Length: 179
Image (cartoon, rainbow, N blue to C red; front, side, top):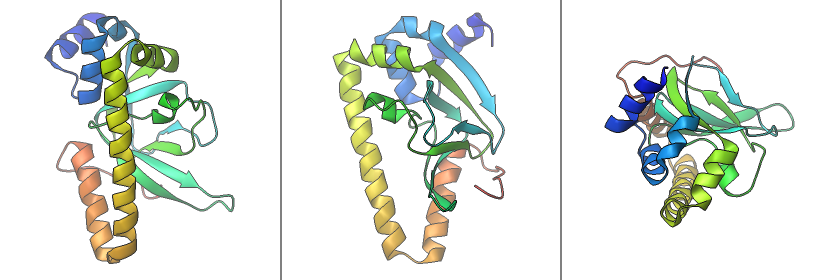
């Protein structure tokens, strides 16, 4: 996407509220933003590998999956335009504790890890925002654990489909068969 198109998009808002706050705090950050589009099933991060970028989804859902030593695994959560992929960077972790897959076709802006961290370091407002977002993700994880323990398979499936639907940003979407 040419720089003029990125600037026009950012002026209107990117479609990701966290990213909009980052750009407001540090307008120079937009020079380091790269738009990416991935098909469903694309691997964004691999578990236990370095994290090179933070991703701010604009459209589509990204799934965070946990792999076990025996090769089994499961999806832990999905992230869409309400959040970001790369939260471990904020806590000083440079490798991914999970695999991240593009769950539904989608678009994101990615920002190199050093720029992402430097932007946060320079802004007390962004530090507070990241603290709140971190608390949100922990609360959401706790809610998911409770729902997975207390609800029927039908209820859990409905919750998961609604979660993906909200993040996909469109009425119809394709999901890869195996995640």
